[in-house]
Length: 189
Image 1 (cartoon, rainbow, N blue to C red):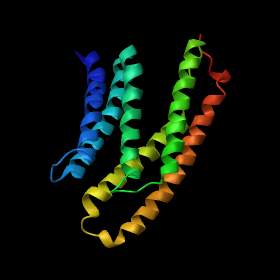
Image 2 (tube, rainbow, N blue to C red):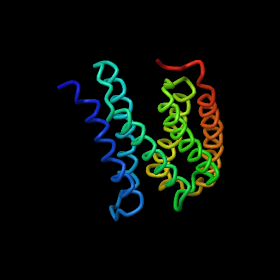
Image 3 (tube, rainbow, N blue to C red):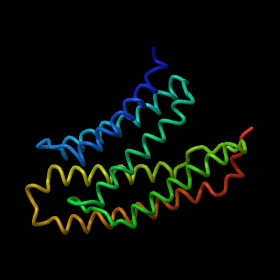
Image 4 (cartoon, one colour):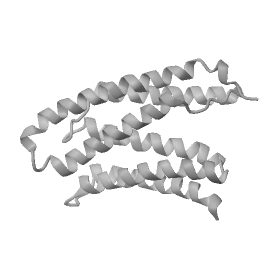
């Protein structure tokens, strides 16, 4: 039974991706941004636990290897699209393009390395990148869904602060991608 928990959490996160998208863009619910924020936080928590449990129970599966990073990328990129769009506008569109390019490029590069039997382990830069991205997204969503309605006159100051934070995140994202360009020290068998 334990061996199914990590994949179940990954599958649950995959289901939450369209729910988050619907809540942000199409929902007529009164508190759609609050619900979207909640869904994103729950999905982020499942991401932490599915990896921990997979390692603890020793159940790394092909499904998990493919769907876990795919669900993460879709959820993160959808959230970033929401942050560059009206009505939020919490991040510069060029930051989004930088992050998008890095994610697509590194995903393709990892596929290429896998075909060459070169296996690249996650490193500290990837964890820092993920931490910055999730911290920024969750903070921006929480601000917009919970604080903005009460302090709309300060919105431009918050937008400026989030823009600076996400530019820093973009630099860290690029640095984390550079580490994948030199895989020789990490060749697999």
